Image (cartoon, rainbow, N blue to C red; front, top):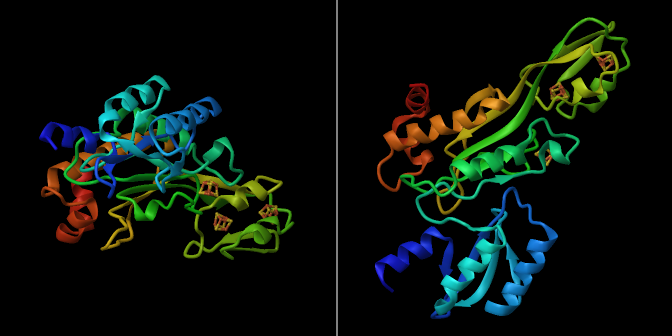
Length: 282
Ligand code: SF4
Ligand code: SF4
Ligand code: SF4
């Protein structure tokens, strides 16, 4: 296969199947969202070009299989006409994955889908030293698995006690981390146990617990594959509105520090988290 075609195929998330001359076409979504019209049309495209099946990937993309090589260009245009884009492969910012977030989940602290849309418009597909996966979760439950992505964020609320407690124990009962006690109508938060889920703040009928700080916790350097690594917490709370700037700063630091092919976790293993963080803050 010619070099130009090779780069076109990788850049557009096409995968050569083990069956010669046939390809899997990967189509990206924003946070897993597709309209019913897009779904119906993708089903029709699968009938027309593939084997009549669609496959959902772990990164919230949709795959169509058994597409002949001679039809890659045609299907690219038809997917584009549906308002969809191909997924991305190789050393680039890959499709962002995101949980339901505030749009739907009652536990959510942050609007993960909105941030995923911003990232999709501004960063997905950008060339990097290595694969760069980003995942966004709206709360510490981490449904989108931010700790096993190169850059992972989850929403947090850091609670703080103020006056007004009536001793109803709602906060104690809702806290799964057993990080709060109430004594003589005064709540005490055990900082070392608290996971900053914010449920106690929401459960308090008297606003005697407030969110002293709210936003995203940021992890970097996580990955899965044959040498899995858990991400390192690099910022405990950043403002939600500034998340995109922090992600941009992490990518800039990565580009300055990485050798070709290194993932963020590899750079951290080589120079240490403190060195990487220093570079982000430049
Ligand atoms: S991570 Fe939190 S906000 Fe997101 S879906 Fe899971 S529980 Fe809901
Ligand atoms: S924020 Fe969550 S973990 Fe922390 S005290 Fe409140 S309910 Fe418990
Ligand atoms: S929920 Fe509020 S009022 Fe009830 S015990 Fe906790 S802090 Fe006090």
